Image (spheres, rainbow, N blue to C red):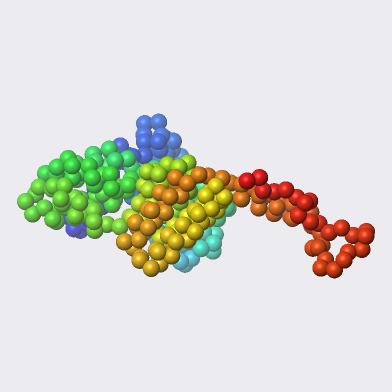
Length: 369
């Protein structure tokens, strides 16, 4: 079965020294390595992008510490499955005096009830929980369970480390690969070692003469789809807005391309551009908002992939436009006054009594444009 397994499974590290890209955790002085080698592991949550080694580290923890390994999938396991695994761990500890590592993949998909089912076993040390998640544990893991676990963040694997991994894969598969082919796979995998190995495996299928070229690599990469995780979604759009705010046209276009290539909803991008036109440009260029609206309307009429030109047109215009937050600051000040209780009756349409003076426009000065 191992011979038939995907390349990523056959290339899975068997020791901590073989783990790539996570030296801050399992390097010679890494905190996670010290805990594993000293067999002083408590429950942990591994948080990081796909393909960075979360499952690999969980298995190595069990092997290195000589603990039994039990795996649960948050997609298929229910409360009954969790209780069965805990019962097995209890019997194993009482009969064989051997601890159990319970690995929960995609732990953020567990409901509150499912996570609570783990809580008591984790609290008394009956099991060592290793949860893996691509989502921020602060929002996706119950506070009670999170407070009993240490959170370790995994980083995207850098291109140099991925390229080294691909060279090992080439030797394993008996292929010769051009440097340019390995380099583009390493760069386009965006820190996902598993995606890089999957693309390399496609290259092996395409290269009938055992020689992988740049053309093979490009074709293989065209078959993969890059997606943004929930955190990446907000991080990238924030970088996109900040680059337009700083009038960095090329950087803004880069983030636009990243979002479109990752399958981001183009209407979401267009909405953010309309917001930016009023929030960050305002009256410094009153034509910016109609322009952003025109981009959004043309997107609906044209659709992708052709509408990438309209989106890029809008990004260049907004990034180069003069910036002013006077409109934003003015309405924020007005809203703050209202929330602070600075309110009164609207001017009456009939003549007011002498003792009554309604609040009028001369009482406030918000706009400093």
